Length: 555
Image (cartoon, rainbow, N blue to C red; front, side, top):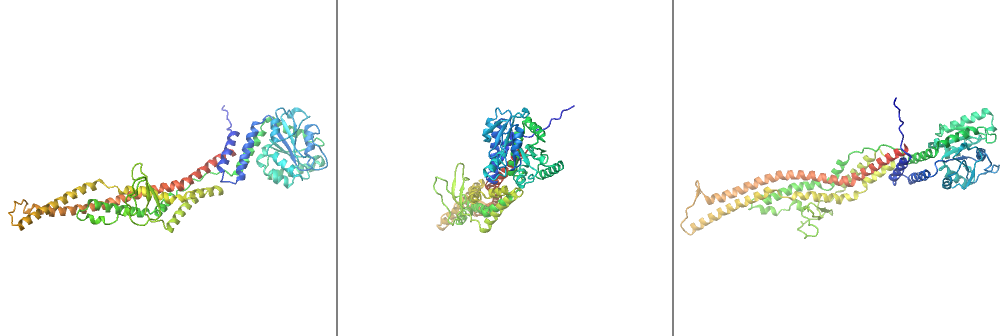
C-alpha cells in the first residue's frame, strides 16, 4: 500500500522573503501605506520568530463591561485584575503566566511590564494570557494600546456580553478586518448567567450569524460565565489545545503575511503584451526622414557612378551638380580630433548626429541636414509611443498600468538625437564605391587616351599636308585609316561604356537604396526598442516578478 504524502506549502521564511520582494517591487507603484505596511509586517514577523515559540500569547479583548477582567481572574485562579463598576477598570495590559520561564524577551517586545504567575492548574503550560484595556474606552491611550497588541499577539480571544455582542464598533473595526486571522481567534459570550437557557441559545445563534457575515465562519464561539464558572472548562480545554500545538504564533504570522499581501493587490498573471514595434518603427522612420535618405542614397549612387565611370570628356559637367548625400551631410562629417573636412553648403535642420560608421574606432560628429520632423510626424511618433504604452498596460491594475505608460514615455526625449545618430551612422556606408567603378574608370581613360592619340595622329597628318611635306605610310583597317579608327572608335566606345555604366549604376542604386532602407529600419527599430519598448518590457517584467512574489506570499 502506497502512502500518500501531503504536499506542503511554502515555508514561513519563503513567504516572508516573498512579501519583502513584493513590497520592494511595488515601491513607487502602489500606495505607500500598503508598501510600508508590508514591510512592517515582515519586520514584525522576523522579530517574533526569534522569540520564544514555546509560549503562546493570548489576549482577552472586548468592550467596556464585557467582563474581561473577571474572566481573566477566573482563568488565572486568582484576582490579578481589578474588577469594579467604575469604567474603564483596566488601564494597561497585564500578563498571567503559566510556566513563564523564558518568556521575558517576548513580553519585553510586547512591552508588558505587569507580569504575574497564574495560580490555576498547570494544564495551560506555556500560555501567556493578557488582559487588555477596553477597545471602546473613552481614553484614547487605552484604545491605542488595544490596537497595538491586537496586531502582535498570537491568539485573540474576543469577550462579548449579551447586551453588546452586535456592537458595530467591534465588528467593523476589528472582526471584519481580521477575517484572515480566523485561525487564531476565539469568541466568548460572557455573562450568560444573566440569561435563561433559551435566550443563551438565541444569542449564540445570532452571534454565529454575525461572525459568518464578517467572514469568520468556523471561529469557535463559547458561552461562558466568569461569575458562576459555566463554560470555563470548555474554554480552558480549547486554550490548552491551542497552546499545546505551539502553532498559534506561526498561524498568526502567516495570516499577517496574507493580509499584507492582499493589501498590495490580488496576484494576476502578467499580460503577454502586444507587438507595437512596427507602428513605432514606421513613425520614427518617417519622422527621421528615412524615405528622403533612401532616395538620396539611390540618387547619390548614380551621381557618383557617373563621376567615376562617365566619359571623361563630359563627366566634369556632372561634378557641377551637388551630391544628394553630401547635401544631407551624410558621409562627410569630420572625425573627432581630426581636421574638419569640406562640408556642403545649405541650411541645417538643427538635428544633431554622431556617427561611428566611418571606420573602426572613429567617432564622427556633426549635424545632418535631414529636414526636421513636421508637426504631423511628431504627432505620429507620440501616438505610436502612447499606443505601445496603452497596449502593454491594457490588462494591468491601475497603478501598474500607469507605471507602464510612464515607462513608454520615460526616454522619449532622447529619440530625436538617437534616431538621427543611427541614420547618419547607417547611411554612411552608402557612400562606399564599388570595385567595378575603378576598373571602368581605367578602361575609360584608356579609351580616351586612344581617342586623343587618334586625334593627335590626324592633326599631325593635316599639318604635314598643309606644309606640303611628303606623307608617311598610313596603316589602315580595311579602307579606314588607323588614326580615324582611334579617334572615332575611342569616342564611340567611351560614350557606350558611359551609357552601360549609367545603366548599371541605376540598378546598383536601387539595390543599395533597398539595402539601406532595410538597414535604416532595423537601426531605427533598435532605437525604438531600446528607448521605448525596453522600458515597457522592464516594467512588465517587474510586474510579473511582483505577481509571482505576491502569489508565494499569499500561499
